[in-house]
Image (tube, rainbow, N blue to C red; front, side, top):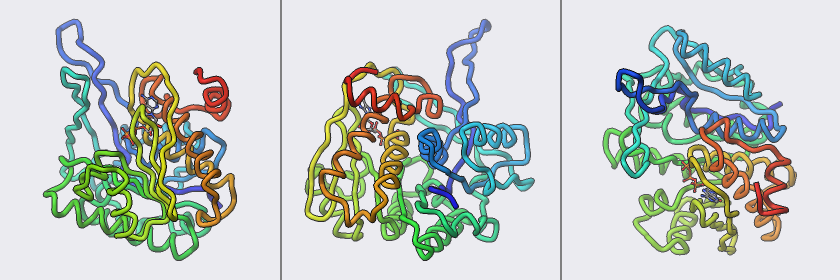
Length: 321
Ligand code: ATP
């Protein structure tokens, strides 16, 4: 049985590396996809994790399978398909260092995951099932996602959801809202960023926005990540903020996934349902998750920047990396 299983997109991110001798931009091949990053973060902390998704039966797909195994995440749910190529995303940095993603997908293999291809045995005994919204942008991966969440929930898994709002991936905003709302209705634990919660509720004030979202979807625990400021939480009638740690940030890629993976690790370690947690336990778990997120910003990349338990504890104890 797995501690956690995630379903979603898994693709190649081409990250800009500068210019070649001929003055042309050079891109580096990296594994991409938030659900995998969350599982990799948990695996690094010693948890047994697995991933369900689809890549192409091509060299990039084989590289992604190898990368998954290297992170200690099971590939039992990873399908290699002849129907389409592995999805690719090219990342561009503007003059402020802000990232934008440009996809070559028409469709890419990740969007073609079908309900009948999902490895049901992985949903059977998993303690946590995690998903995002990118697999909900189109069919058939929309139905594969929703049906898998429902099955895992029936089997007693805690459902974790990161809406991961990427406007360019959706046909239109209304469609995005409907799919994200379907995800929110199924989730026990939701992690959003400040920008996402403003988009979802139309409310700038975090205390009000979180209350609105929580009540509308009867979410058990809502976490709002806020970069260097740390994270907010809302659970039962508690509302509060836990500060992060001051670090030398070089690349924020993967901070949110490292944060969530670390938080889910704490959820499993406590071994009791969310509703039985005390506020003290929640804040302790968030200190651990904030430290993991902060640590992830001190190194480049998503997966290589994830911290170990020792590194996270050192940051909490000493305030230094
Ligand atoms: P992403 O940008 O990876 O999609 P996100 O927006 O949810 O995800 P962030 O808010 O950037 O993620 O980071 C998650 C958590 O990591 C924050 O809540 C915070 O605790 C910690 N963190 C992120 N950036 C920093 C930083 N520069 N300094 C200290 N802590 C940070």
